[in-house]
Image 1 (cartoon, one colour):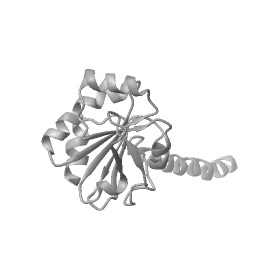
Image 2 (spheres, helix red, strand yellow; image 1 turned 45 degrees about the vertical axis):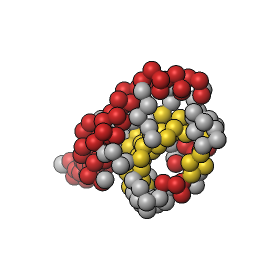
Image 3 (tube, one colour; image 1 turned 180 degrees about the vertical axis):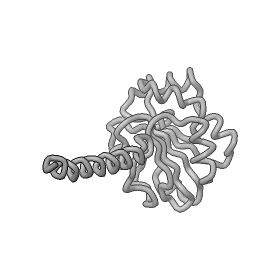
Image 4 (tube, helix red, strand yellow; image 1 turned 60 degrees about the vertical axis):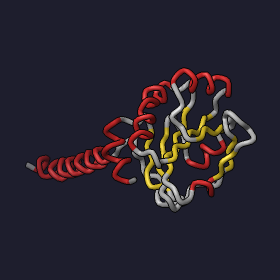
Length: 174
């Protein structure tokens, strides 16, 4: 009887801890991690165009328009999975500026990739050393950000975009 009395609180504690752990883990979504950048201004950058190094775009150029920023690379298999969906986003939202940032990639490979797969981007910038990606907190490809017309990040997604994400998470924010 004494053993049962001693074991009962231990079993109750283990049960409570298990429920707490299950709750915490069920609330986590690895493709939508918390980001300290949400509702903050986008990091400062000035990026060269993949096709013409005399053309650049900087963060201040993105104010007063909604912008979708997609970090991608020619060597990234998940990037290839989502690539065709950016054409759909562009078709459904013709006023949306789509900035593709080619991340830590060979320029020739990036150009070949966009020639073969098509270029859905309004502007393709080069982040050869990963500095811009680092400032955005990119740690895996692809990563996509939606910027509002005030220059604030309002959405971040890690991994390939799907039609469901477009219709349920991105489009309602536009």
